[in-house]
Image 1 (cartoon, rainbow, N blue to C red):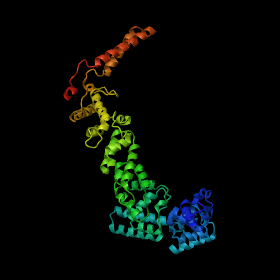
Image 2 (image 1 turned 90 degrees about the vertical axis):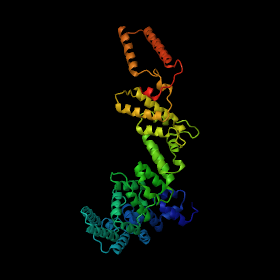
Image 3 (image 1 turned 180 degrees about the vertical axis):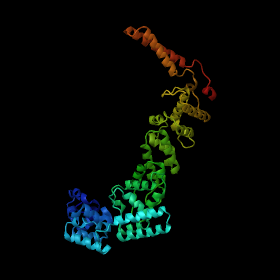
Image 4 (image 1 turned 90 degrees about the horizontal axis):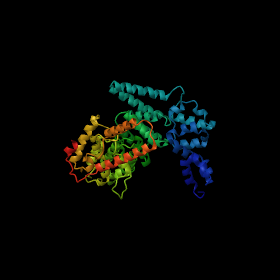
Length: 480
């Protein structure tokens, strides 16, 4: 890097800045670049934008504001909002009297005679209160007058909320929504939202300020397009992907539609990958994942958004095999709600989406679960006491049969599985027999019990096997 020209090293320093010591280990020229006033001014402008470069440097890096750097900043178009010049500490933090004089002279050129008795923040707050009060009273003429006064006030004073405050997103949203001409002032003053350390979080907070705990709408996204049109913000693919992860909602992502035409990249691939990651991070609940997959199919008209491809990526189904993964089958085992059953009915046999064979295992598990629920032999020991669950299973049993689902022997054989009540009663009878003989048991008695249990299991297995071919019963016989 020592062979690079000085101008190129100065451009690198503008983006590296305070991390230059790490580069100085490999490039001795960086020390000389870091002492250059123009390179330092470029770094401060890139880091804080023209609107906040002077104020942020006075507060955080006063040692950098030498007279040469201060003149270079003003020469490159840096401005200072008037409400910062009203703070008495501003001029005492500068390292030299000459730098303080330069800042004071430039502030007087912009705003005239300065007074620490005035407070632009208080003035703006009072004007905003008047605006809200008149708006609630539907005083249209007074609202128009206050809007004109506020826009003129922002133009004359370069008033802008401080970017480092937690309320920056809420305050800038209020200004952009109610005073549209303010964005033109900020564009001329050199505001650049890339100075924010976390742009996706700012976008997230900005959107939620507009939604106010209501269903997401496209209004806040339309305001964000104004930032893009005035060159105050550029959203990169990484920023957009992180924003989708933060939203984690189909409705919220749909509300970003006005942004798509203003972004400088192809939105669909980025949004599809981000949405797939969002689905993967959801808890293992089959119906939510199905809803997300169906939403993606409606949102994108590309082969990569085929529901089969989406479910393959989510559950890790191999591309070379039509056998569903254990996670995929397990997601349909329990609990089963209406969305899962409807999805299995709709996509169990493919419907031209090329996904029918891959859900075959899950489809059988889904139908088995319905039958087991009807028989009152579920893993959760659900009997007919839960009438809602039983009615739910009855409805979907009919729908599965009408869809052409084959009824196998394990669904109709009478002795396929012994009811749990009988097992409990059998266990109690065994306990009664044990009680007759007393509480103490010798080793021979234990061996006799083990042999008896083995004989009982063999008898159960023999009784469960059909002695002769059986004819499958119609649906009504199964139900009865």
